[in-house]
Image (tube, rainbow, N blue to C red):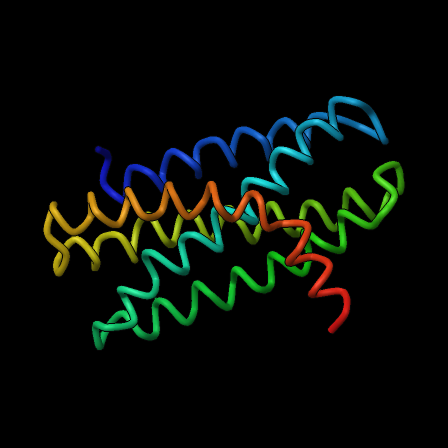
Amino acid sequence: MPSIYEAIQDDHQRHRRLLNEIADTSGDSAARRKAWDALYRDVKSHAAAEEETFYSKLMNKTWGQDAARHSVHEHQQMDDILEELNEKDMSSPGWLQRFETLRHDYEHHMDEEEDEVFTRAREVFDTGETEAFAERFLKRKEQERGLIEEKRADSLED
């Protein structure tokens, strides 16, 4: 079983690849739609599972409260941009500009998480815990994939 760090980093590698694929496309093409759909669904399920299985544990540590709150706040900001982009015309110049904002913000988030948050978390969580977190993360991520549309509908009603 991988550790939570490995499970999250595997997702981050896939997300970086998808961000690059999207940036290399143009207009409302099939390639852009395919890469966008994969990124949209994976980031949404990743963030929700990460908050529930990893950041909730960091909240129990004094130093982890600020780190977890900061990361969860960044998740919310990125989720807002994901929804905005999902509704915009992919062939418009505004779509690509907004996508570049998402890309920049998300790459910063991933780097910060991998460099700072993981380093601190490794000081307090043992290997058994991080493997258990990973198992819960992967299961929860799969569950979250099935909840994307339901959560989106609820959000639009608010």
